[in-house]
Length: 114
Length: 110
Image 1 (spheres, each protein chain N blue to C red):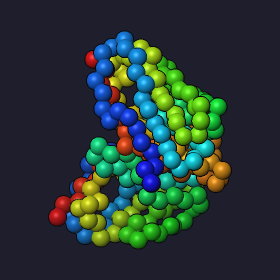
Image 2: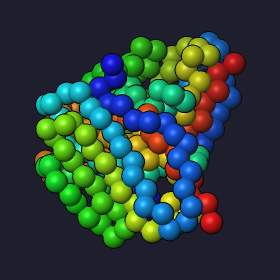
Image 3: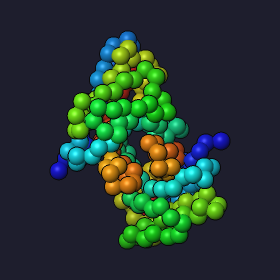
Image 4: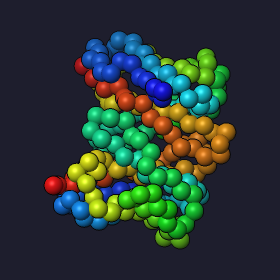
């Protein structure tokens, strides 16, 4: 059982370029999330999806977009990357039908925008 | 004031010590409380989950919640070098978002 996979593991990107971070889960969880983790700021929610076909904004959504075409995949797109988007990005999922929000995290993507 | 406050550490203890990690929160609407462990260059992994005041024990780990004081703790007994990691508290108000503390870095020295 893989759980959550993310790709790429790391990426160096020129400012202004478009980038999509991939996330796939095999747990059939209905909810998925994208966080960024920065030193001193902890984990901050970017976007979330409670079920396939729906998405919502988190704490820091500007400059990012997501889509949820099916249960398993939740890609995060940076339309025009800026240096302040240099961070470690984590995808997570949870089974909201169970009544709680225990979230399971992927291994992360380290993104550097130059 | 942040909604969830956590001392960043680092906290350095000798092997076998009892470790106490703490978070305070400001929003009394928070209902569910979690502790995650994150090793260097890895994703957070869920350690403990509780939704009520009191203690919950799992092996060497005990999670404690005091809703009246808005204070949560994680105790680690007989700490091991393999416990060296960053520990994140996370709190859920039953909405869409978990609010995370900034994490406490723990180092257990042999």
